Image (cartoon, rainbow over all chains, first blue to last red; front, side, top):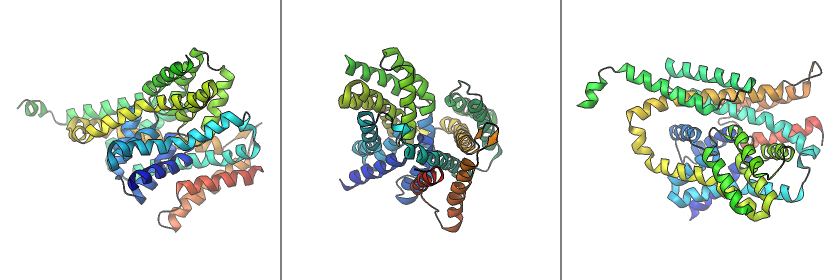
Length: 191
Length: 186
């Protein structure tokens, strides 16, 4: 019961401070669930992020479900997800009821000018941390660089190409390289 | 009936919104406009609010649209519907994960997807910093966003060098909000 409550409160805190979507949340998850609480390892976080990126829905929900389930099964997952969603649910609900012109409140708009930059820094920091822990080989580095370049082009020119396409392409290329690297595998598999 | 429409509409969003909120926004717009819940202008406003409040953008948007259409019950149902598919899918994946991950072919595919994802995240972060830090208005570079960016970057990455562990992301968000108000006034 105590762990359930802890999961709920931890993810409520993460939910309350996640601005600007799922990528920014990766820094918070890494900081809280990997470094402080040690609920999951960095590798597990990488795996679930890849899975989150290739399954539908908000990345935050995928991560919360995974961590919650690992700690306390189904109810752990449920506690984490309710914690994740509850703060923003309350905030949005109050805004929709009482604040017609939320974005025109000047101090909120100004605070958000700062927060937007912080979110960019957090996302970049998440990428740098992941890069440092990556295998020091050439193939993944080339994939990383090409993906970053492609994503920048997509964003700068607002192309309607989903990042999922890039992920699938990278997965396919890697699989082909793997198969090509072991030509004897055919015989090996049949045996 | 509006509640059933909200449930079905946002289940669809939850099932097909691949690749994070920015990829999902066009899909949500399509669903919302096709049911005639909101006009385009109100929709754009709600997207902006959802981006500026904490929490997953998709969930915020679902809560907002649901609440505008059918009060608290609408908000609850829309939020539930948008979360349900990824909750169920992740549960299934997690239960099967260990066995699947050991497979050499799965390993090979993941080995390509991981660096690709890091590249994507890198590009998104760099672009966000660039877009919000370098603002050119009427041919002149605005100083305040640039200084704000440099100060925040210095605080965050500098703290990592001075103190082990640096400052937490939550603290950075708080500092950034205060710095934004300090730079632009209340």
